Image (cartoon, rainbow, N blue to C red; front, top):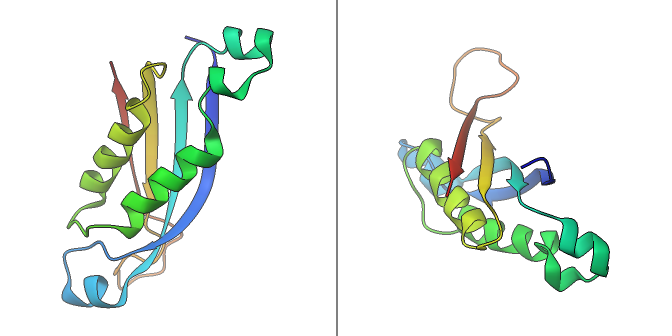
Length: 119
């Protein structure tokens, strides 16, 4: 499938991590998603109901990020991929979860996990 919808840089505060202070204080997580689906019907009909509404998708993803804490960003990425695949039109989803404030005692730019899930 060559058609894609991308949403990059969704920043939401969450309380994920293995350390007590991460769950207590929270931190920002940044999420990128790329959906693979056929956009021909949406393009031909110019109707938002024929595609994935990226604003609504962003809201559902934000609920998961701000919701129930998990230890690993791998788990968070898996949950977010499931949200993306809940729309039957999506054939594959690639999700990257960035944790730019990860508790690493060295200078670093980013930590991220990427998963790709298909039907």
